[in-house]
Image (cartoon, rainbow, N blue to C red; front, side, top):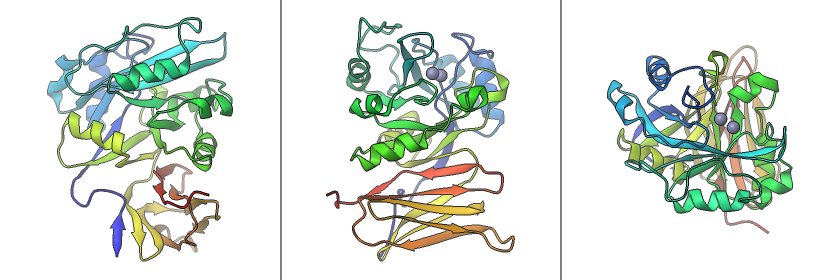
Length: 302
Ligand SMILES: [Zn+2]
Ligand SMILES: [Zn+2]
């Protein structure tokens, strides 16, 4: 029987959950930023200024849904840091903890993540590659909902945006954590390069946040994913035209498929061995942009 990873009914909404305005170190005002995303076809946006939570409720009127958000940072030196993005439940105007820039002497990363989780936030580890995090430091963090596998701003800045290998290692080590792609826009070159698509029943802040927490979304820097799931022992996917579809699993190896004779791939499937702890898919288009599903987890972990 065909079982989709995504809810059977619902609408797809596209959004960027990590961005900066002139309220912190971005070049666009909140109004400019929301208009840029609205006019580019986005359904939702979170303006996650550094250590400042703001609902921007005055901008909710133009058709774009604004999710209340913040990016917290702990600095350890000129280069090393930890940044964590949090998206607050609808209607929240302030945090249950003191929302400010904390020093490494005041707080650990886990304490900060725990504050954010206790506050009801969707908690997303930002750009660990750019932050110079060691894998052991990432693995020590518990309770995170997601990790940025692609950060367009940091990719533009210094090729610091691709953290898929960190995510894969977390999954291999038994963590149940989702993957996001974001713009982390500060300047115009950061716009429209990384996003998430959620499948929701209603076009509301509540449904978007619930879909993020539940993992009912995929991350992308280009391709569109239409469906992903399991059908009689095989994993399947359908997507916009791509040159490669990779099924990634562990501990049994997955399988890659490539387009042949200029005929792009729009779907693929792969028979599972039955001993996978999880399987996920990555679709790559002809420009090299990717879309990442979240994993389907099985009860097979050794
Ligand atoms: Zn950051
Ligand atoms: Zn940021």
